[in-house]
Structure formats: structure tokens, C-alpha cells
Length: 123
Image (cartoon, rainbow, N blue to C red; front, side, top):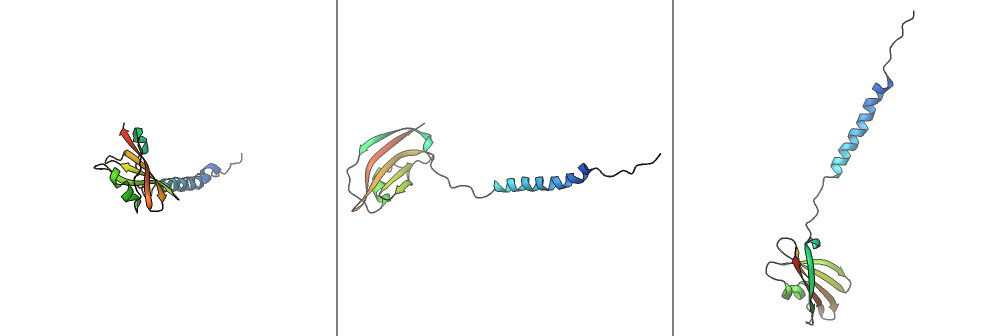
């Protein structure tokens, strides 16, 4: 009877070659999740009801901040939500990060003029 020589199985040989790419993939996925945290933004979903206080007929101001200043309540901050060529929307952000209000402005010859003011009630 002839004796067979044993050879290592192909599965045993290919295991290390499969583990290395899998490890690399795992490390790459973990590192992809790392990085800078995004800047905090006002959460517009926190306010359940926003009601328009009305249309504003005030004169223009040189800057957006100056135009919105009369509508900021104690503890609220100015946060530019959107600005397109001749219109802008500013959020009035509360200390807790919610939205206390929203002011819509238009660009006119003398600067920025508010057109509408909304006040929001937090949930």
C-alpha cells in the first residue's frame, strides 16, 4: 500500500489572505466615521407652531443684523437661515437652540427691510 503525502488545504492557505482585506475594510469604515463634528445648527423642527405677527412697514437698515435687531427678544440670537440675491430669512434662536421666531427681509435701495415677522411657540 502506498502512503499519501498530506498537503495543506487550500482553505488554510487562503484564510490569511481573506482576513487582511476584511481587516483593512473594517479599519477604513471606522476611520471614515471619525472627523470634525458638524457645527451646531438651530433645530427648526423644535417649534410646533409659528404665527405671523404681520407685515412690517419699517425703513431699511444698512445690514441684516441691524434690520432684525428690533425683533430680537431677550436671550435670542441672530442666525442667518437663507440668503438669496435680494431676499433673506433670519432665525431668532433661543438659548436652548430652538427657534423663537423668523424674520423675512428684502433688499431695497437703502439696505435690508423686514417684510414679515413670525413668532414660534416651542413644543
